[in-house]
Length: 387
Image (cartoon, rainbow, N blue to C red; front, side, top):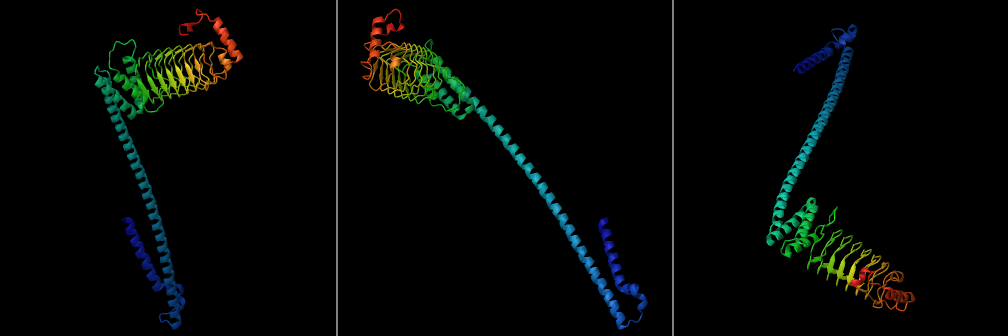
């Protein structure tokens, strides 16, 4: 209010001074030459002076108006920028508040989801632990749903299912339970999502008689000491699997991958391998009786000290296979198979061994057969029982 009053007084004083200057200015400036009765010439001088004063005043007024307008514009611009800055800060605060709200909502949703998963998991475990077959099946399929919905629980569910199979398909188990839940657990493991698993599936000592396993990811599965009688594996990946000291009676492997799998010290009777890949398969000290390899890639397999009693190799790739000290009594190599001579010369070949026509009559092979037939001592070879 004080500033407004001061400005008003200044304006009136200035206006009064301007009027006074117009009135008395000519006489103040040149009073000695102007009388009280003005001649036309003196009137022209007074008029010119007053015109100059008016023009000067108009110029000052225009300059003041421009200055005022500039200052007002500058102030308005500063106010606008400040308003923009405040708006930006407020918008950022609003966005941050929204982000925090969304984060809190997501955390609450995750906590809620985790709680629901935990409840479902506990319920599924109770069903799996039941003695009722139907309830066990329901629990197994509930665990499958949990495994698919929650990647965090994937490994836990896999280990639980493997433990269930070990418990209910153990050769030393006293549980007399339907094989349906065991088959269901195998099916769930077979079709589990493809995720990284930092462990092997532990199925040691299981008895999976008559089970069918299709399209299963069984990489690094541990089937040590397992009984796999009449088990049908179809299009399964058994790479790097451990099947040592296992019993495979009438087992079938159709279009399976056994790359770097281990069958050491295992007993295989009437087992068939068809159209699969078994590169670098290790079957050391294994006993094959009446088995069949058909269209199988056995490149660089390790078959040392194993027995192949009446076992056939039909159209199988035997490049680089090591038959050192292997007993090939009654083994049958088709014309399309390609066992290497140097490997056969380190094995035990008999007259009953059927070799490809390309190797029949080979001098070194014939001599090796003679040596084996003449020098075979049943008391020195553990393959005698088979051969």
